[in-house]
Image 1 (cartoon, rainbow, N blue to C red):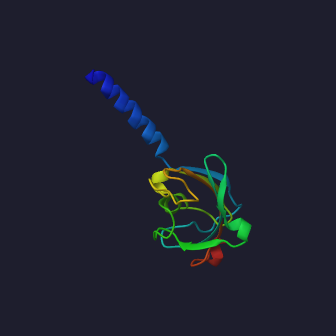
Image 2: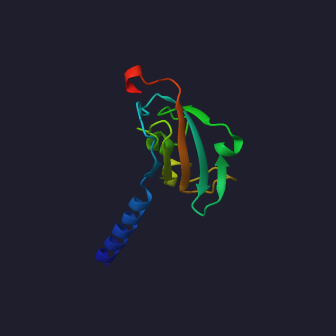
Image 3: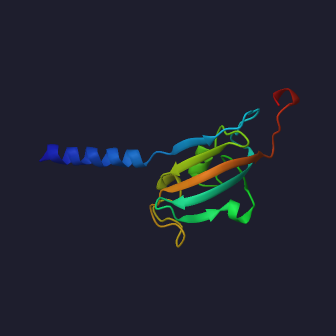
Length: 137
């Protein structure tokens, strides 16, 4: 009986670990990348956020207005602070963010249900506080 319970716990924890990881897929990279994002950078991002069933809950593109924030300052969900590191201006990524790196157990009702993993199609529009040196262009 103890062995059976141990096997069930092992399977449950393995499933949790698989669902708990941030997935970053680079979709498009620019021809040149003189600077990459780092903690403390002021970014301008375009994004479209969807639930796992494909329903869109928000999009900066629909408003034609990128979101400005400071990377690593806790101004956005943890999945963004982690998933947007080392990006180039013009780069596009697809982030699949586990619920614990998004809005957690409670979600963000009524828009985002509890324990929702989120998918973001993101594009780095600008790094506002840093520009490449002339030799880096």
